[in-house]
Length: 142
Image (cartoon, rainbow, N blue to C red; front, side, top):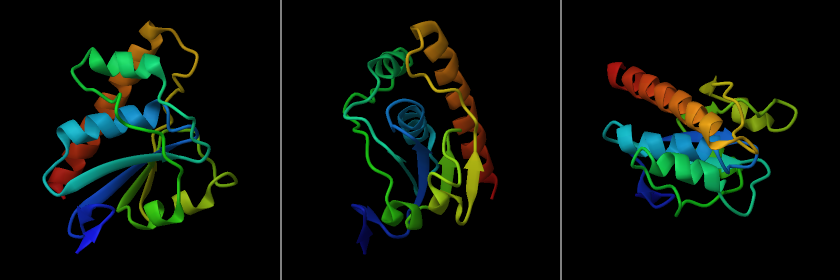
């Protein structure tokens, strides 16, 4: 059976931030690269913007990951329920989106790249990559 265009035996990781324009999109891109077999990433935001932050796209291209075709998506109850693990990038609180905190949840507390210069966005990108690699390692050991 398929669910969200994927097989139901695949486990979904949901990366969440407010605009779904930078951090969560970068995390989705990195997880796609490093994901163990059977794991599928998605990302969404509580107030998504019309497009991904172009500086985030540029920073990811520098490390060989193209997120330019990804689009900001609205966080939905269906996405939340379909996810094995929800990861807040550090910008969602219980008042804004309480459903994210149901079930298995992590908060990475990563700085927002919005309005930051490319050098700072590179640091944020590298931090996200490190966190994604740690997550992948933990998933492989379970």
